[in-house]
Length: 244
View 1 (cartoon, rainbow, N blue to C red):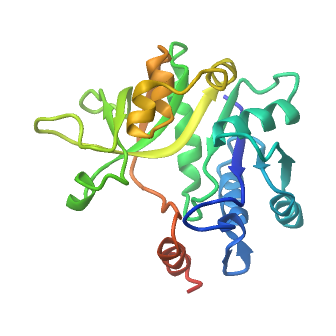
View 2 (cartoon, rainbow, N blue to C red):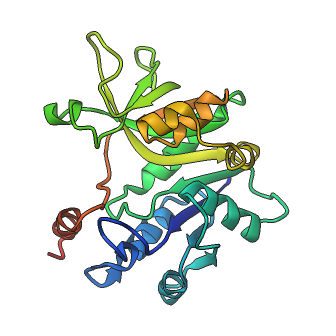
C-alpha cells in the first residue's frame, strides 16, 4: 500500500526550543529523522514545516519540505495541511505521521505502521512494543496501549491509551510509539473534530479518534525509538548515534 510519509516539525517547544535544528553530528535532528524515513522505502517523504528554517535545512539535505501555517494547533493538523498541498488530487490513500523528534527511528517502524490498514475496517494504525523495563510500567511519560492481541498475532485492535498502566491483571503491557498511519479520509475527518473529554484528561490526542468511533489497530514491533524532549534526551541521542 503506497503511502505518503509526512514529518511535522516546528521550532517552538517549551522544553527544548529549536529542537528540530539541534545538531546531531553532521546534521540537524530533523534531517536524521527524514533520512531514516526515506530508508523505509514506504513512499515519498516530506517534512511539514512550521518555520522556514526547517524547510531550508531539509532542502539543503536534498529532501522535500512543505511550509505550513505556523498557527496550526497540532502535528496532525500540520500533516493534513502538508498532504493537501503536496497531493491535492488524493493519489495517496494512506498518510503516515512520523514525529520529527525521533532521530534513532528504525526505518522498519514506518513500514510496520501501515500493516494494520490491510484490514479495511481500520481507520488509523500505529505501532507498539512490549514493555520490558520495570520502570516504564509506572512512568507517566510512557504511553501505554490497551491492545487486544491474540496469541501469536502481531496486529490487534487498539482499544485505549493511557499514561497509567493498562490493562490490569497478568500479561504483557505495551509501550505506544507515536507513529500513525491514517487513511486519507480518516485524517481529513480527524482534523475537523474538537478535543474530547478523555483526550484532554489523558493529554493524548489519539483518544479523540477513539471517542468519535474511529477504529484503531496497532502492529507489534521489537524496538522503541528515543523521543527527544529535553537536553538530556538530545545528549543521549548523540551518544546512541556515536557523535557525542
